[in-house]
Image (cartoon, rainbow, N blue to C red; front, side, top):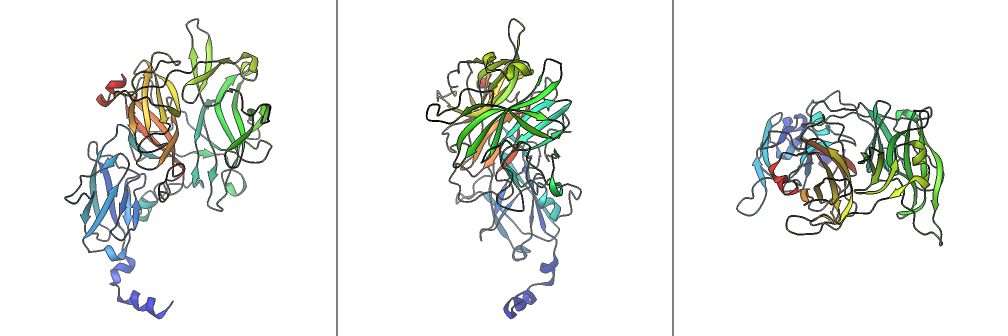
Length: 453
């Protein structure tokens, strides 16, 4: 330690060297819920972000007992501007003290919290809270797939970050939970996954499909075979830099190895066939037509393929039927909304098919604007679209609705998506939250959704 540093430390008040952090809790003025993913920034540009409990632990000695201005920023939540146009508040931090700041929600969706990644309660734990929260070992992961299989809810995610090196897992990670893993649909969100683990108990890949580059899975679904056994299946693609798909096929889950096994190749990139054919990818939903025939529909967001509900039909492209794409939904002001990706489900409360989808080329965020719409048929036409979630300069893509997690007939609609700096020009990534899954809630009896209903 240099003499200058030693003298500086000696000059500090003794309490500043060992003081407990100052707790700031951000809550939604409407309902009192804690708000995750709120940035608090000092005038010397130190940034804090609230965790899943809506808590930030300020531990800067230079702020203690000093009136401090904190800028506040959060997509979908805000405080009023002051006379100079700044959004924030003044506070005098004191060790071990607590301050609550209420924010106003400006969007329809309610942020419940982060589902994946590390330090979900990292700020609260600095204050001695949530001591028993168990870290998963996952630091970041891409888009989610879900399927109900043999009494469990299966989850699979794309490229995954770990702590040990910038390059992590590139053949999908996976986990299981109970079918209804949430005890409440209010924050703080606490959903623990039972990850498939390997060496040193770290999460491991679950789709080691042969070939260079990442493996991405889609069309994650459990189907009965001729013997009545449930088979967990998926469509896969192999990818090489920068984002070029060069092979696509079908794979089947092996319960003994806890991995997907390649079943068949559907397409190899070539000059003669440069693009892959339509395949059972995206987010599947089950559908019974007017003649009581059961189908599984594959789409992202809207169905482009339907297949009879059986493992044998799924593996036989001769039994696949193409579905015409509907016209793009239109907003209440007449704007045509081009979907990027998303999902649809049948909703008992609305007695309609509903969709959440990301807008392609949206504003203000290129891939961060999320919309809701309804239809009497899974094939459309889709009614007036209403924006439910917006980002200033960040991506939030590949949203998936979780219909089975909430009770049948509930007005609550849950969806998650990937929150990432990619495909935006944000100057920096959000610590801990970047490249992770965030869960939102929509109340379908909200009057703001009336144009869609």
